[in-house]
Length: 117
Image (cartoon, rainbow, N blue to C red):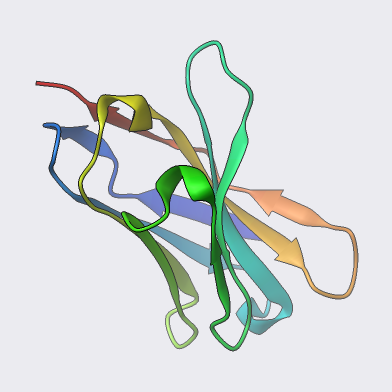
């Protein structure tokens, strides 16, 4: 069974930084494109960034130039480095694993990020 466990959320002041991590177990990490979604109160869940096996990344316009996604295949972990955080970045952040060879996707439990002074 594929399991995703996130860590690194919390409260940070505007302009600060946080690093989210998501460790995958129960399957071969290289068989997944990894990503991060977020969902703010009252809003739809939105895709923030993805990273493919081999390291090709896509970071969406809403956080471009501030967020960086990376993966550590040896540790079966994906990271989201978030810099210059804004109050509008406040959301629950979810790690997701997209299976390369099927339509399966697996979700983490979510981690709260709050940007406030």
